[in-house]
Figure 1: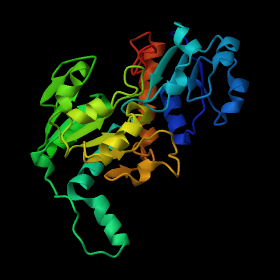
Figure 2 (figure 1 turned 135 degrees about the vertical axis):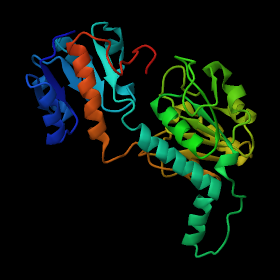
Figure 3 (figure 1 turned 180 degrees about the vertical axis):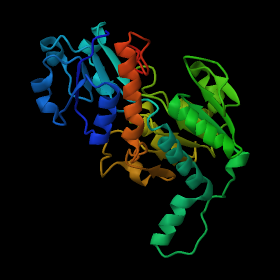
Figure 4 (figure 1 turned 90 degrees about the horizontal axis):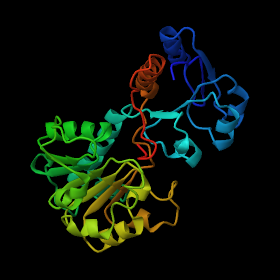
Amino acid sequence: MAELTKIVATVELDQQHIDRLKQEFPDLEIVVCPDHSELGDHLEGCQGVIGRGLNAELLERYPDVRWAHSPGAGVDAFLFPEMIEREDIIVTNNSGVHASTIAEHLLGMMLSFARGFPEIVQNQQKHLWQRPSTPVVELGYQKLAVVGLGDIGHALAVRAKSLGMQVVGSRRRSQEPMEGVDQLYHPDQLHEMISDADHVAITLPSTPRTRHLFGTPEFEVMKDAAVIYNIGRGDIIKQDELIDALNNGLIAGAGLDVTTPEPLNEDSPLWDTPGVFITPHFSGSTPHYWDNGIEILVKVIRNIRNDEPVFNLVDKREGY
C-alpha cells in the first residue's frame, strides 16, 4: 500500500499539526472533517482516515480506503466485522501518545491510597481535623503488579521503580527483560502474579481475551489490603463482583478511570462503595496530546509510503 495521496481527519487538528504533516509530506492532501456524518462527502480518492466514522457502507462505497488510524490507543470502534475481514485494510493507533500522562494519573491514585487522601478530602468537606482511618504506607516498601506491559504499563513500571517499589508485570508478545520490571509473567500466570501484590494496575485494552478478566476468583487470590486500578476499559472488571469484593473486604480499594457504563449512572452503587476512587475517564488528557500524536502519524505515513513495516500496526483479530 505505497500509494497514499489523500487522508481525511475526523479529529480536530491544530494548524501547527497540519503544517507538520505538510512539512514532511508536501504532496499529501489533508482534509479535516470533524463532523463524522459528513465523512462520506470527502472520501473520494482517499486512502486513509484519521479518527472515527468509517463503517461497512463507506468501506464498500470507497474501495480506495486502505488505512484507518485511531487517535487513541483503543481500537474498539474500528474493529467491526467488515473491517476485520478486509485483509487489504490496515488499522494503526496512537499507542504510546499518552503513556506518560496515564502513568502519572495511576501513580497519583496510588499515592492517594497510600496516604489516605480520598478520606482526608471527605473530612475536609465535613470540616473534620481527622487522620484517615486506614494506616498510611510507603510505596517504596510495596509491590506493584502491572497487568499489561505495553507503553502505558511500562511507563508506570519505570516511575514506580524510581520510588523504590518492587515491580512485576505481564505481557503476551515478548518475555524480553524490561527496564523497571523485576519479574515478567505470562498472562496465563495472572493469579500467581497478583497474589502478593499490594497494588494491581490494569493497563490492558478491551479484547475478547481481556473482557471480564477480573472477577471474584481474582479478588479472592489478592491480598485483603491490596488496591486494584483500571485505566483500560470498564468491561475488563466484572463490576458487580468488584463491588461485592470491596464490601466483603476481599480487597481494600479500587482506583477506576473507566467504568461500566460510561458515564456511570447516578444511581450506581459503585459511587458509594467503600474504598472506591473514581475519575471520569480522563487519565489520558494532556495539552500535549497531538504534539506527540502527530509524530506517530508521521512515522506511520512514512512507513506506508515506503512499503516498510508499519509503526503501531494493530492486529485486527487480537484487538490491539
